[in-house]
Image (cartoon, rainbow over all chains, first blue to last red; front, side, top):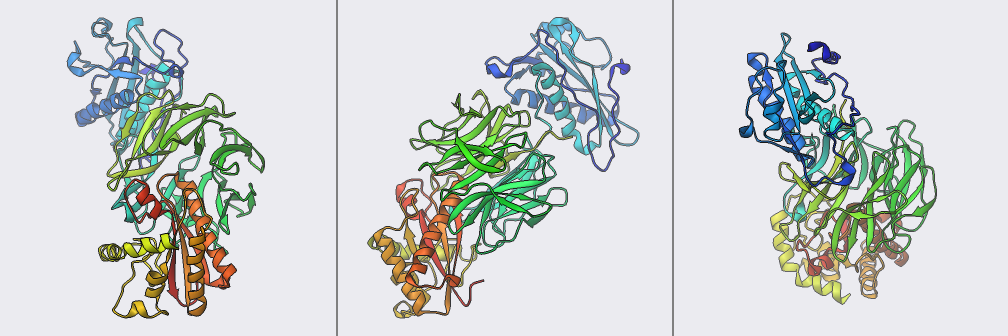
Length: 446
Length: 175
């Protein structure tokens, strides 16, 4: 049985990076979820507590299985069968699976795992996935090795592998979200940058609340964050090194200029953002190494919220050059832009999907705010949400889920983070410590 | 003029209470304005100061440090132009002061758009003052978008107050 496992790369203790390649298995068997169809009936799955191979692993074996179950259930694609319904416990990771026991409770899929605390203190997690009604394993077993402190990530890695094998798509659970944590009254709100796991665990603050901070964005590798800071008293795009928790302004504010709405190019080497000249906002691109800067739009209209296509060749942005906020696509070097939004109302905050196929946006119409998606040519617009104030969509690493800000109305109104899948189903509130806004989803962690 | 002035007067007592409550909170900080915090019109007053036309209190309260804007607009209404003219005249008479013009938006808009809109509003006020003869070098602008509403309800009565510019005075040269 052990031979079946892919051997894991050894990860350094200090870095706490998980090892072991996780590859989507193309497995067009009966057990398959087509995400694009919009899942109405979630797939029943059993995730019994993992088997503790060493006494120190007892607690973690249960907790890691709980993370796997929460990830799968939270995706809206799976329904985790409660443990109380299980006929027989899994007491040995290597013993043959009693398929009949799992068929009897209609578990379509079964996830089993084991957890070992190795001699060097590191955690070894193994798992297998079974297609219960085919009496067969679905893909090979996998093994992950990491420090004990990253036990939640081990659970996310397992869940990503399960999700991948059953949907045929990349996962998104082993990822992080940077956001703005808010507190205080509406007219004196204090804002801090914070980072957490995608599910709200492991919150860490990255700035204090001495200056307003807005709209953080991850670099393509997740190691840096761009955001807008009022540390100088004026909006200024700023670059933060996540590991060092160190910030530095980008460019120098000359002649009363203000900069905001930054976003990385897919190669991580340059940044697009808005810069004001006299009260006019245009889009600029700046090389982070050389500091050379070029202007991509030149109209008297408001041009802001630029976002690159994943291949780096085009930029979608918003402009009110037509008289109201609308979405436009232009070459990454600027020049003529093509309007893509033509529905009722106004459109802002466009974000290109990491898959390249869709653009997420905020739409305002008849006093309501919506998060929606459209194809990159503007066709097939679909609204996914509706509320008093929804805005700032960000894509999951696999382009299947959107997280966004939802703010309640009134004097005591406050923002929270929500997620919804691209079929408009599975709207969920993302847990955060207090009010939160402006989420940005990281790429899948290595 | 009437709209802006009346509303800023009517709300003076309330604003003073607010100033006490939030004093010390973070703002963009001119010497006499409460800037990004509670908004303008809420500086300290002492008896008699109001009557001294060269005092910042006079600027804030007798002239009015705030200009209101229509939804999505950054053009100055005739009333707003009259108010800004008076602000400009005051600045030209009182050459020791510089001003930061804040531009604000109501909450009905996306964050980035509102930052750009606030920049437009602040710039419209500044450009008008420069046209009236105030030296460019004495004026700077900053946008707060929808980050610093002065009124916090979610209907037009508050939104109308939040779509504003605030001229915040400082003593000495602009930085």
